[in-house]
Length: 193
Image (cartoon, rainbow, N blue to C red; front, side, top):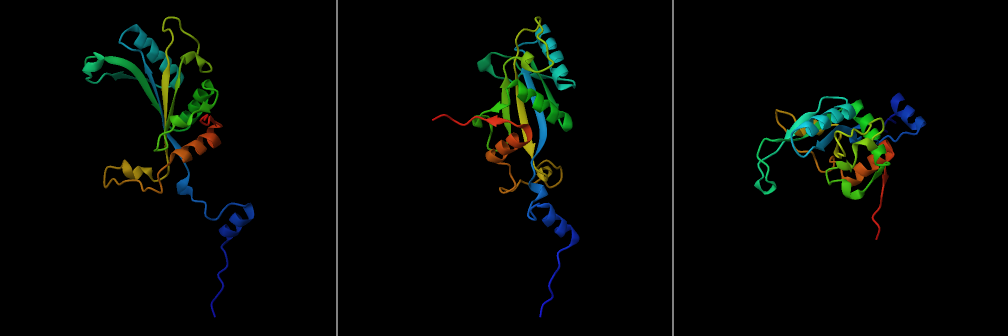
């Protein structure tokens, strides 16, 4: 009647090695970028020194952040207020592990958003390994924002015919938590009830 189809050599190897045949490479999660933000509060020597600390931590030049027009905070538009750096690639993964050690590898579920990104704060910059306290700067903290993506996320950023990411392909909060546990060895504290 019908001819029996034999599995290919690649399919036989997958079966023998124990990998699932249905594992989809496009569903793997990777670190897109790591953004570190440090607020000095005002322009001047404190901002310059915080920029130097940021460059030492990030390993690349820090960009000065400026204020937007917000009359409620009493700040004029365009005044320098802090420094930030964006790190991508392997350097971002190494730095993220180093920064997470300053938090003792602990994260809270509230630090993860619905898009699969997460952020945490470091209260004092000298909690980071290999960074010494500078009495001229004083105590400054920083915000660390982690952006995750899957292969195929480029479609929302491309210039020609940008498109939305499908609901099934988006990274959920639970996906990001699982990635942090597996890749970073993070301990996610459950809520106490």
